[in-house]
Structure formats: structure tokens, C-alpha cells
Length: 103
Image (cartoon, rainbow, N blue to C red):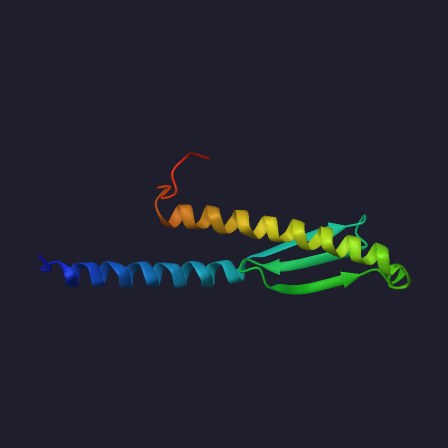
């Protein structure tokens, strides 16, 4: 009944290695978004970590506008990262969709 546990263990190790490789690959990608006509520019890596932020000096005296533009840039960048992560994970699974449905 449990004769194939070694095979299962090897398969799990393979998935773990693929997942780590995917994470490393994602960390190398960058996603930049601009908000407010370029007054705020935000760059994230593929793991969703902020790696750069540029704010136009004019916004430093307008806290409300700065907050709005930052929120927009963060949300847009996070969407880009999430979409890329999903596409990369689907590629790792060979196009299978374990969650059902289609794209």
C-alpha cells in the first residue's frame, strides 16, 4: 500500500526545487508603474518587494495627492506582479489549472 512513498517523496522534492527556482526567477524581474503623469514611480520585483520609489518634489507639499498617487501606484504594481506570478506558476504546472475553470 505504501510501496511508492519514495517516488512521492522524490516528486515532492522536485516540486520544491521548481518552486524555489520560480521564486528566484521572479525576484530577478522588475515591474515599474507611474502614477500622476509620472509624479510617482514605483518599481517592484517579481516577488512583490518594493525596490525603488521616486516621488516628484512638487508632491511633497501636497500630502493628500501624494497618498492617492502612492495607493494607485502600489495597487497597479501589485496587480502586475500577481498576474506574472500566476502565469509563471501555470507555466511551471505545464498549463494545467488545478483550480478548475479556464483563463
